Image (cartoon, rainbow, N blue to C red; front, side, top):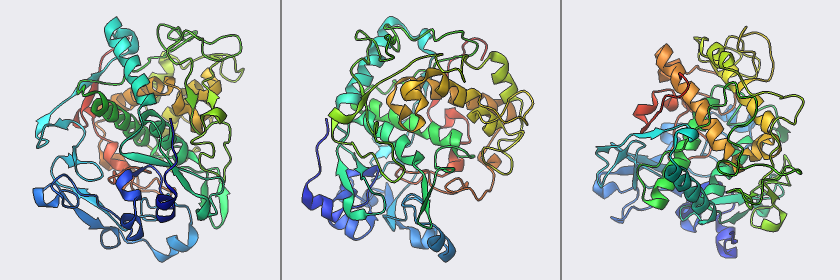
Length: 443
């Protein structure tokens, strides 16, 4: 499934992550410029009015104190690697402005498209089989656009290597990469990461689902494809953990041999060291099979209740100081699952976090949890709860708070995506982003 990049490319492009493939080749990396040409031959499709190459030094200068204080390659994304990237005009999008913004399609990206995400049990038999076959295709098809980073030593750039990965594995890797401990002042700090533990959490995962959804649409040519969700409220056991749906587990906890995902393996599994990036990428023999044991962990004998969700939705402030796992009366912290939803002050595992722990195995190893398709359905429902909060509270990007948490500022780019999406951009109704949710069980 994976092949190493050539030694020549490796030498020229040390340090890339979920990078557009053209930006890992030769002069693009050496010049710190990621502005690939569109089909008209001009960088970012400039001659066709699609976009232009933007210099970050001009638009977003980095303070000298920040440069001295932090050394993490992901901070102030993507400045560590590139000074210039594409900025796209109108409804154009993607790393070379060659695609449309989420919610638009057509040659000139002037047609509106809104897909509907349904609860997986609302899908017809044909729709479900299509979903499973699309996932299988994404799992086995090498990404034509992106490569991923692997190294056993984050401190030594000369150990960095790049490997090809399937479309689905790129998605799983993005989550893993964003969750690795932050490097600052030469030390690794596991109390922070770019996808969790702060106000960026809901939007970061919203963009992740949109990325995978769009990649599958492009792969299959099915513009109507939408990822489903799993409404787990009040379930006494996992009702979709059957071979007809997400897969039953055998006595040892591995997915049953007759399930859709019986032979899937988890990229970046087995070597989850804080000073490494996906050390086993490229060697499928070292990757773990999907593992799931719903309800076996004594810390999580249940899934969140209907009341837990309603209590989470009652908190009017999107987030509150100190904008981390100790924030009280914070919708974000209750949704993420560091806060008891009912009182808004007691710190406990609930909601998002409780679900991960409940499923055990791959899902409970949160950095690599994206390898389990259950992750998609779980986070799609978390996103639906965010959407309901936005509707009830009339939330807007202005509700995203100013804060000093690493990578969590409102105007910081979401790590590690191209082009730059700001954290606050996703605090808006999903209909503005090209999708809506079906109603299910009153929500």
